[in-house]
Image (cartoon, rainbow, N blue to C red; front, side):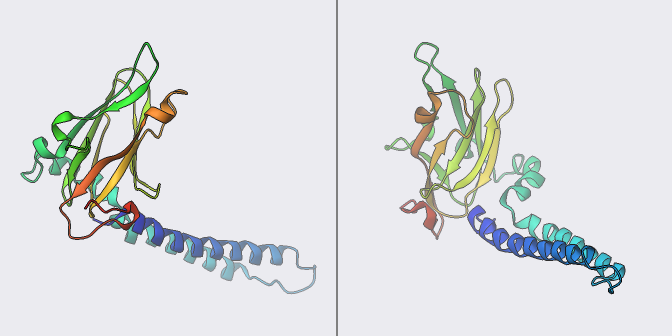
Length: 216
């Protein structure tokens, strides 16, 4: 499974080139439209539609050849079989989390599963294995996001009260990650809905450089 940061870096390059090609097409077309009457057309119809056809073909091809590199695509396709297979152990790979607001103080917070925490209060996640973060809310709509130490997002989901809110993921590298709510749930959610270094991933032979300390 590819790391989401690496996929994003590649797609930035690919789509930047693609956008510049489209802009070139627009300029090409505009120049032909404003060409003075009586002068030969700069762009012939056949050439123009061929160019557009190539752009469409390239755009669709990018999606076809990169969809299986995007981390969550494989999970979405295989999840129903992953959870039923022997490689998924709920006692180790399922993390039940509660998002809640204190009715008196208004303080909002995540409550992590005590049986999955180490001595530092971090959830210990096995590297290279599928894990599920099952987040429950009975009051407000929250967000659940995992962030690297450099502030970049790994993955996230919306947490809606009364609904199933679970996120399956596989970490390909060791690292330490923050949990933040990615949904505005009130003025007191910004400070308390952030848990620094709440997830530690261990067990792989390489570290996530963007997570600074790499889970060591």
